[in-house]
Image 1 (spheres, helix red, strand yellow):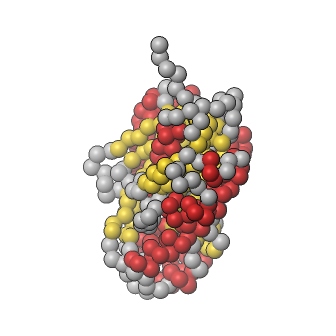
Image 2 (tube, helix red, strand yellow; image 1 turned 135 degrees about the vertical axis):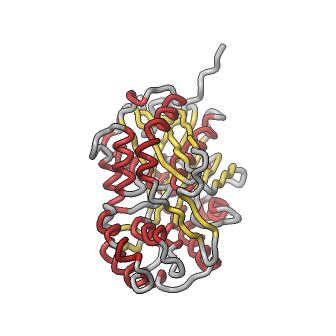
Image 3 (cartoon, helix red, strand yellow; image 1 turned 180 degrees about the vertical axis):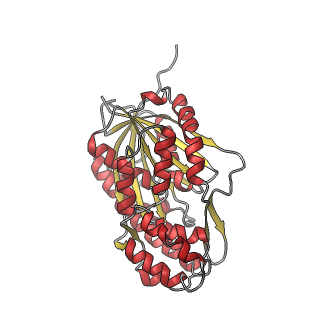
Length: 356
């Protein structure tokens, strides 16, 4: 007799951003001051700031910090300080919203790719947060922008393994600390026009009332395209990470995303036409347009994606969860497919549904 799968509920979702706000107009003036006299490339790329669809973003340090030279050690120290603070803020908010005490959490899944933490972030904050000493820890590195979806899918699979298991999933990225004065490359200038910092946290629980929480979590899937390592990622360099951000991303998505979404949906047991809303990582204005084109949802359909990009920029992995938060606040559709793209080049998807 087949065993029924254990249901997993998303009990809560919370977000957090650093306190320093950088308007896009100031970002453009800032980058012109940093790079304008050092490369003729800037004049050609300056319109990126006006066309990015971003009004402001949040960053982990005041603008003056980015005008100075920083090595690996100092950059990573900033990452650790900011990431720990963001972890505590968004995790506390998510636990409170779910009505879950820290000592009730059975496993901690953490996704982050913009710095190195050993011991990992959840271990660093465990004492202050009040987590149990026997809570399982799953730190994940390297997923990049796909980490918000991929990490949530991993957390859901962990929850589904044991009835009643409670998982805290946190994803944090501090993209702004990768700004480099020594590297006035096209990718670096474009990334400076797009990237912001932020964090998101989710609490999941398995085996409870299927009507509990804000969404039910279904199956997910991934697609890795071969020979695409140069599309997106980080170069590990002195004095810090160097962004890989290829101009081929929007046309690649326009051509390939429909097939990827179809395969991921099939693994979830639904057809693309049965999905009421695709909820996507808004990597940039051109990326959103390419996704609308490939997914066949109509121009302007990814409205919450544009709003999040406008207000926060591209925060890498957490960004799609900021979008999901707005989708839920507006009224959770019957079926939602979370989609994000990341290094590899990878598409990661996860099916969510309205609890009944």
